Image (tube, rainbow, N blue to C red):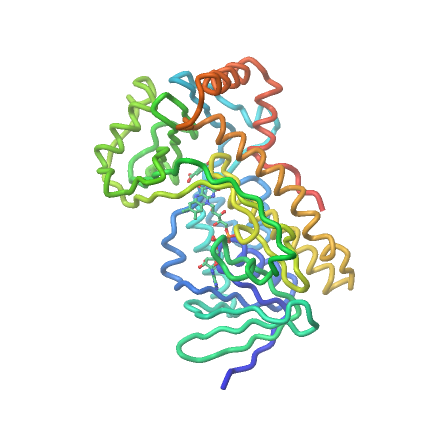
Length: 395
Ligand code: FAS
Ligand code: PHB
């Protein structure tokens, strides 16, 4: 016998998208349930993004979880791009009068989960067999099992915040859903190490041996990435081999400040560009990775998820508080305008910064010419800067 429950918004997924949406709605007095198939421990152990656009910072503060971010996060006014050992700084503050915050996705996820649990608002971990029904009727619902019991959650709306491999996007019929995809011929091997970062700001480097990224989580914890083959695996990469290769890709001048250490996390992520249209189907709204994926080269995945949620939260609040459903009707149109521009930027940065196995000598010359142009053109750098800090949110 299923236990029957009722809420206003059923949110599938307790990643940044689902958690932020639930807390923005709760602040507005709107009832929501968050349902995730993973355990809290699993969710809080995931190492993902590290750079927050200022719009993301403001949304987290609005949701009430900005305190630890403001205390422990690092505000950056620029980052560097390095081509064949030549470094060029993109002066975000000077070019577009904006900055970014370096604060791990892992940490903001913990902050959001802690606040939700403290509030006593519903959040269900380790749910199984999550299914979404009747989203084109007046009685949408979510079914799931947990601890051996079956549950039915009746709701007004369903928010599909369940990531790329979730169930929500699959609820949209094949003759309605249109997808666009590019899979890149390489992945990113990421390492987390408790050593001070090689430089004060992020360095994105492209050299003959491939891409490398130097990022960080704090003044004593660094996050490094190397472009690797699609068939590669972490067993091939001892810490020594990783740091030897990182040194070669950074060049001796930068590498002299590199502090080696034992990795506390090592993983390989594939790179893809992906968009699903529409982002709304009946009473169901897709947000975050459930609707789109970007290669992490532009530091956009998390930030694009937050942008969707800021639009969705405002639309739902307008609907409940003013009876105005116009923004809900236009949700997909509003979000996709930003999604495609962010897909473009992430694709552009990936094309510029990676060694493509099938690239012709002409294409490699185009990369070098693009970088040379960047170093000479303030306008070109301003274009990168305005995308990196985050395009304005347009409702
Ligand atoms: P998430 O994938 O974070 O969350 C979805 C949630 O839904 C998960 O908790 C999952 O357990 C749950 N779920 C899935 N299916 C379900 C089901 N059927 N029922 C219930 N729950 C279900 N972005 C960057 O900007 N920089 C990076 O460096 C970066 N690195 C990344 C590395 C990896 C390995 C991955 C996978 C992504 C990375 N990203 C990065 C992108 C990442 O940060 C995402 O953009 C961000 O997590 C998006 O958040 P959500 O949309 O909430 O999706
Ligand atoms: C990270 O710190 O994990 C990070 C930073 C910037 C990116 C991608 C990943 O573009």
